[in-house]
Image (tube, rainbow, N blue to C red; front, side):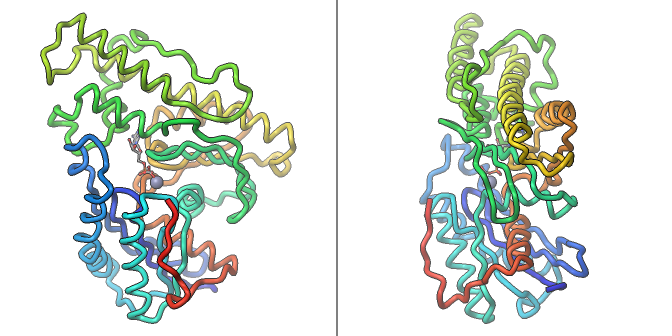
Length: 360
Ligand code: KG4
Ligand code: ZN
């Protein structure tokens, strides 16, 4: 179909995101993108409490939907399909999006398109850039870290994934341990953003060094738990040296953040290099056309993105990422993934056949 308007619903974690994307004569346009972030709530409790996240999704989803229709200046009847994240994610949170999607689909007699959250992150860059398949994808977020080779919208070859934590999770936990959230400037920011900004203030970026994780492993897997634990130990040592009172921040936190960012970036580069060499050796790229997509919330980080781009350049590989507002969780990537599925003739489901059944 040449023209399609799809509403996308994302509630897999702590963001209630709804967006409307229209594809018209091969052009993609975001008509509306509305988000309600629960970040400021969960920060107070040191992490996401699933039943509270569910309550917050429930209390906000109708309002987010209404705002979305107003922003797009569209009636529900004009929407062709309802797309919704069905996995992976927090089951209680996913359930809210799914129930809401089914409610709209039933009310307006629209088909539903189930969307895989990670596939949506991975393919989001294709909405704004023409990226020929196949391509390599580095997917880095608060819940995942993966390297996959993408042969087509439905053909993903997983090359490696994290053995423990995700990089965004490491940023979030370490920023919290550093108590940087007490800085009013950083309030309501996520850990990755805080570390990125604080690192810019470093006067001695080499003051804190971390060993490269999995340095001797020849595979493409990741590990961030070592960096996290080393960070906790280094912060404790520094607090003792400075005799820090409780609830205060170490004086050289900016140097620490620069060291941490460098360690995470080096690990991501090292693993991406492994994957790149593997794909080239096996002749997986088509001809000389090599592309790498960096996606997920951590792809927002300019230091990481630039480091990965420079690495890729050495292999004659062009690097892409979605616009910053679409790197993190959002409804646009869900709607866009559904458009790709429909363009590829994947069957939509009618709400009658769509069971409320989520996988975490
Ligand atoms: O993709 P996303 O919105 O949600 C998940 O699917 O997990 O990613 C959220 C993660 C958070 O852990 C956050 O710390 C990280 O993305 N993040 C960043 C930056 N912005 C967000 N990490 C590093 N640098 C950033 N600028
Ligand atoms: Zn995500």
